[in-house]
Structure formats: C-alpha cells, structure tokens
Image 1 (cartoon, rainbow, N blue to C red):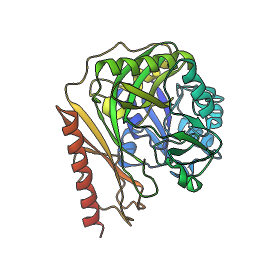
Image 2: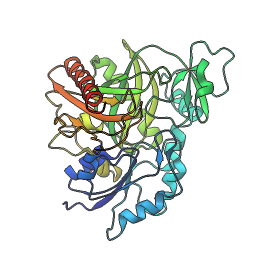
Image 3: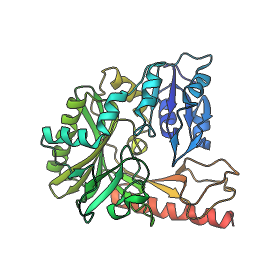
Image 4: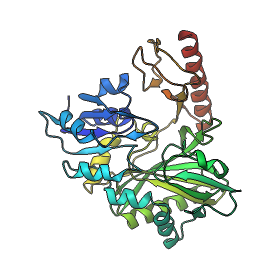
Amino acid sequence: MGNEGAVLIVALSGRALAASARRGRYVPLVADMFGDVDTLNAAHRHVRLAGGLASGIEERDLIDVLQILSEGQEPIGVVYGTGFEDRPQLLQRMAERWRLLGNGADVVAKLKNPKIFTSICSDFGIPTPETSLPEPASRNGWLAKRQGGAGGAHIRPADKSADARGAIYYQRRVSGAPISACFLADGQRAHVLGFSAQWASPTARQPYRYGGAVRPAPLASTTADKLTAAVEQIVAAMSLIGLNSADFLVEGERFWLLEVNPRPGATLDIFETEDTSLFAQHVAACSGQLAAASGRAANAKAASIVYADEDIASVSVSDWPDWVADLPVAGSAIKAGDPVCTVYACDLAAETARELAEKRRRAVLSWTRARNS
C-alpha cells in the first residue's frame, strides 16, 4: 500500500489522519472511537477504542491496543490527534514504547494549563482573555471551561459551570469572530498554512459545540500578520513541532489568543489538497524538515459536522454522496447529540462554501430522519 513505512494513529476520530497518511504513502495502523467506513477503508489495520466521547480515551487498554496493531509491523512512530489534551500521561506512556511523532507530554501539559499558558502569552505581549482558576466573585461576563477540553462542547456560561465535568477554569468573555490558524512547526520556525473561520453548532447545554470551519477566513493582511507573529512566538517559546492549530477571537484589528492545540486538529481536511499530504508534512516537521510555503488553493472549502438531533436506532443510509465523510457503518446506533458524519463544500467564495456546507448538513439530517423513522 505504501513505501514510507507503517505508522500508528490514535485519536478520538482517526479518519482524517488515516486518509492523509495513505495519501502520503504510509501504512496507517489506526485506533479510534468510531471505526467509520472511511477509516476502515483508509486503515491497513483498525481497532476500536473503548470509552466514549464524554469519558475520553481510556488508559487501561491503550498500550495493548497499539501493540496489537503493531504486530508484524515496525511502526516508525505514533501520531496522535484529539483526545489527549487532558491526559498527557498517556502520551508519556506511548513515548516510552514508540517514537512520538508530535509534541511531547510536557508541552501538551504546559499549553493546556491555563495559568502557564496565560503566563507565556503575557511574556510575549500576546493578548489573551483574563483567566481565573478560582471562581470569580461575580460570574457575570465569564465563561467556564474544562482544563484540557476540546471541541467547544465543554464551554458554557460561568453560571452553569456546576454542570461541567473535570477541573474548571474561568475565562473572561470577549467579543470577536472565531478564527483558527493551521500551522506546521519544526521546533523553532512556523509555517502558517492558512486561517479558517469557525462556527458553533449550539445546543441548550452546549452553546459552543464545534460546528464547522471554512477557509480562507476573511482577514485583513495586517491582522493575518499579527496572528502569524503570535503563532511564531508561541512556537519558539514552546519548541512546537509538527502540525498544530491556534484559536483566536478577532474583532477588526484586535485579537485574543484563546488556546493552542499542539496536535493535528479538526481543520486538517480543509487544508489538505489532492496533491499534498499534511500527514507527511507533519512527520517531516517532527524531524526538523519544515515544508516550503506553497500556493493557496483556488477554491474555498468548508466542512460542517452533522450531529444527530434525535436517537437513530440503526443507520440505513447507504448511497451517500461524495461530499460526505466519516460515514457510519450500516446498522450503527447513534445517540442524539453525537456526530453522524461530516459534509464538505467548495466554492470560489468562502461564504458561499459555508452556506452550501450548511445546506448539505440539513439535507443529511433530513435523510437520516426519513430513512430511520
């Protein structure tokens, strides 16, 4: 299947990494929580992880699972995605057995510690919202976030923080459009691949749940330069390597850095092209080989997550269009609020691509209701 060697991939969802690895001529050995059709097709081997989206990746069986995937292979290392932000000890355990192709446990622990993160930003003069570990005297105007949380589902107004799980910290609410920078780093330098605009798919209990993203983001060149400078400072300060992302709120020429995700993130798909493999560039950057800047894609691209709005006892859709990914295996049961799949759309204009992706998201929901009623 490939000639670049076998590589272990572990994440809550490993599909995007597995597909990019295959494009880069690697042999993907994948462990994730979904085992959807796309992942099974891209993976050379796959094992479904125990646990759930709410509880996260379980430590107990992880190393055994990766060992099973490795049998008869000699993996060049392990690439991890979402799922380790609040459990860097798992990264350390993996690093004791295989080469970790990504940032180490100490880097993840520091960047996901709100006190350390805000201190780093302060040292470089990077604007970030006021943060408090103890509960503020008045919760008005504050958000409650779970330390090491990902995907936005853990964020809620501070007056509802009692419902949040895990260690909580508080961040002052600031205004602005959510913008994410996708970048490669070699420990000293950063190459920003581009910026995407993001949006939420809110529910009553999860008002900031991640909904999707479109690239390119509508940024003035001067603002893009400021965000790039902030990324470069964080990369140098933390010696970041590989593919990462940084989340901002942007209002005019003002911005606030909310967090840095020191691993491949949700926007990998919309920055991937048919003739490149961001997975291969990630592996190279982890070895100090930073890919040269490439031209921008001609079309805008958007991705939107389809969440089930009701329980689906058994998925019966089989004739999915080619703009749908993360396809559930026929017969899968999906709980209300869990992801069903991802839809994509391309257009010359970013706003039109986003509108088309949202139209397709609504269409998929309509199909699943009609065919599973």
